[in-house]
Image (cartoon, rainbow, N blue to C red):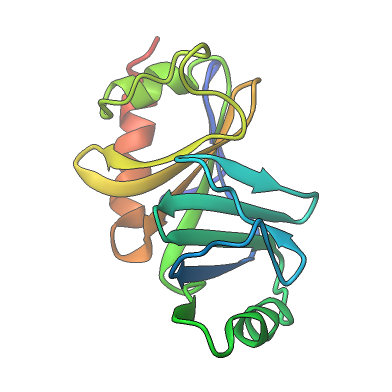
Length: 172
């Protein structure tokens, strides 16, 4: 990726530390908790604890993002879904996670994303799969400052960071 961290007066970009990313596909009925982990059952919502974020990606799909290596997460989920029609996959190597924060973050996203990220529509605890500069990404809003995480395939992460730096530089 381009040189990170990077900042302007209104936008700060950084690479998130190591994170375990686990994809979960599960056929109904859906439990509210799986292996003691809350699953958001409402579209584009996030269930979060201090070290784990569970993003609703589709009617039967979630992405679990744990800070650090979290080696117990994958086997814990595999045991919890044993005997069910489900899939649990380690996706940690497939995506980079870019931290985006600052007062100009929404303007940066508006330059390349069609989602309405106004605070009354999209706020902390929400996520969405969308296109940013024509690149498929997952946006996850962590707090109202605003602070986002952009999850993007590693193969295009460098290009997207370069685009974000270029777009943020033009914000003024």
